Image (cartoon, rainbow, N blue to C red):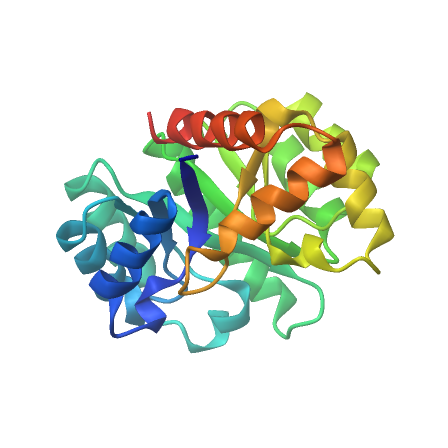
Length: 240
């Protein structure tokens, strides 16, 4: 049986985590990275990773929720990262189509800086704002996280190459690639180096990554066993 790893999920959105992960394990999904979105769900995310085998955790402030974030979020996040050396940073980023762009950016930069300071991988949400993200990364070239993942990546081939060549990004592809109407995204998947590809459910059901892996294999005309093995290795390399 192939081994799969869900690089970005939200298990805090189900009350049956143990059952979900047991079913995932039976299907071949051996691990999952659960991403927090606000300080309000960090405790749930940390508890899931602590109590459910195969689940790892990341905490961050999602750009959709910056306006509702408590004032002491950065202090709390720093305390958690200090106390828990295995915790990653995510989900963080920028979203052009959501309000409070200046606040989004300030919080994103703070989270990115903490990921760099604590040498943790960062999982980045970006919609319509890759040019600004690239400007921020360039301004911090000497103090960036040890690994960065473009979560549910849907950017162009040019942006993918810039992120891969300039910043060693990984690209996590979600069930969006199942949509045959997304021709540009399919082309980006096709041209992404296998050594840079991850797969994700972006959901509370990690078994969805199996279909994503099959689709990656179809797009790249590569055997599914090879795709699953390479992506599993890519993900575990980030965890190291």
